[in-house]
Each structure stands twice: as C-alpha cells, then as structure tokens.
Image (cartoon, rainbow, N blue to C red; front, side, top):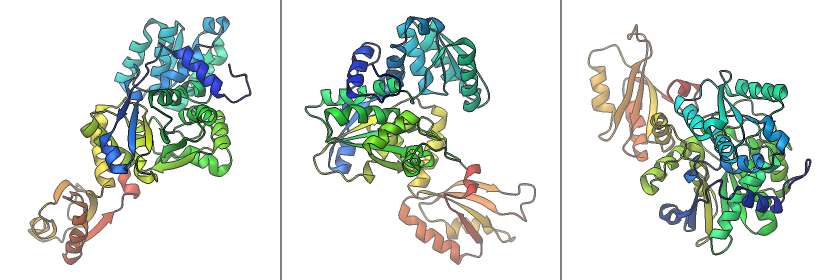
Length: 418
C-alpha cells in the first residue's frame, strides 16, 4: 500500500487490480476499423463506458474505499461530484458496504441524481448542496470536518491514481504484447497518472499520450507553470474533463514521466462523438470521445498497435442538439452572419435567390431587434452542403447590396448561439 507522502508505484497498481477484482468490470478491447483505416495503425478502443457506472471512475473509488480501516468505515465517506465520480463512489460503497453522503450541486440533472441514488441504494445519501459544484464541494468539506468522515477525491489521491492505473494493466494483459501507443483523456489527471505509474515500470517503451479539451487544458497549463495552476476560465462542455486545476498528486506523476500532452477543440470532440455513435454504435459522453478525437494530431506509424480509452458513456440525450451544432461549426459546415437588409420590398427574397447557393440552407433567422426590424440586422445561420461552398457564398454576399458581417466561431456572440 502506498504510504502517505509517496507517489504510487506499479506494485500499488498490481495490488489495486486484485483489490477491485469482482467489484468493477474488466472491460473489453474493441478494434475500430474506422480509426484504423484513418490512421494506418491498428486502433483498439478500451470500452470503459461499459462499466456498471458507465465510466472508469469506479476503479479509483473502489481501490481507495477498499483500504479504509474499521474506524474510517464506521465514520463513512463523503464526496462532491456532478457526474461520474459520484456514480463511482456510490457503486463502490454499495459493493463494499460503506455508508456515504454524496453532495451534488442543485444544477445536477434529475436523471443523474436518480442514477446515483439507484447505484448506492441504502448505503448512500444524496445531498443537494449549493447551486454550483464549488458550493457542493465546500459543503462536503464542512461535512468531513464536522463528522470525521473520509473525503473521496475524484482524482487527486495516490489510491485513486493506482486504481485508475489498472486500465493500463488490463490493456497489456488483453493484447498479445504491450501496445505501441496508449491514448487517454485528461481532466484532473488521475487516469493519466495511473497509467504512467504502471507502464513506466512494467513497459517503459509504451508511448503515453494525454488529451485535454482545448477549453480546459489544466495539465498543459501546469507543465508550463511548473506546477498546478488554476485556469481563470474554462469551457465546461466536456464536463467529465473540464477541470480548472490539475491535481497536486497527479501533476507530480506527470512531471516525473513527461508524457506527450495535446489538446483538442470541443467541436472536434463532438464530431468524434457522432462518428463513434454512427459507426461503432458507442454512445460516448464528450470526455469519452476526447482521446479518440486526438488521433489525427498524432504521428502514428503504419501497423502500430494503438489503444484509445473510451472513458465514459454518461451522456445526456438533451445535449445532442449542441453536439451537432458544435460539430457542424468545427467542420466548417455551419456559419452565422449579421445581415443588414436594405429597407426595400423583396430583399429577403433576393437574399434567398441571389446569395444562397443550391445546397445552402438557412438554419436560423432571427431579427436582433425584434420590436423594430427596420433598424436592426438579422442573425442568420447557414448550413452548407460542403466546406468548399463557403468561399462562393462569401463572394455572393460581398457582391450583394446587403451589409453582411460574419460572426467568427471565437466571438463572444457565440455564447448566445450555442
């Protein structure tokens, strides 16, 4: 067992594998013909979305909770989470027979609250604590101070890291040989640190790549700063990996082994989510598609064995409209414009006839000043048949008598569109 103040070792990961056996699923490796053809490598998907809690988070939780002593078990455990970590802790507590209080922010969707309660059963009390995650986390810490319960961190603990590292161990055992490349998503860094811990001792030649969402690249920021630093603002769309500050323990492991770190735009993640569903039949959450979305950035040699961790499948169906929107924008197939129409009869018809191409569709049309359409532009969203249709569209707009202002995807105005 890892002693306080020391980083976990490969032996800790091996011990974790025995400790959590039968308490979490041994997930399969699935070959992706689509990604293999696109990269020239042999790409395998590690299907952590098939866990009972539909993510890998139960591994670290089960390993940490499984090492509590009798006094700690009597006092119970506490965690704060808005998603996968809560479900992992709930499942681990129900499996191990440990009482827990799980603090969820008030904005947690009802179906997630119900899922946590169902997984935990009589062993778990769900507490709605605060309007935001930070307020829920503060309530959990206050609980720990008041009751003496043990806090179960989502990623920043040596036992959590060792539990997540069992994924790398399973991958090597299930392939004929260690893979050439292992690609994992990164939020706080627990999964990356766990895989690095085991592979660095057992199979140091494996290239490990950590992938962060571009809007929440806290581990990359930590490596630049020489230590964990809090990002002033993050994009929370990839909620399973949208972490403003990398963990202290996880950063130490990453700094020791210096893996390759890359970031992926949120739109590219959405495109990969759609591809996983349409081709492989995998319902991935944004963080679950994160690692696969980075493959086109990596220099992979033909025939290399590449394993990509599909880390979770807890996706809300209500989000698919935004997923499609972000994907279309990223692929250059959807664009937004502010259009000032001359105050003359028939200008809208002229716009449709003379500006739009044969494969262009208006996906949104809304006057910015609804109560005075004569003095305000219209917000127009246009979906193209192909990316190549944009240049001709812009040329027709420039030649028209209308004043057209494109809205770039990085504009603050997109907050009101997405």
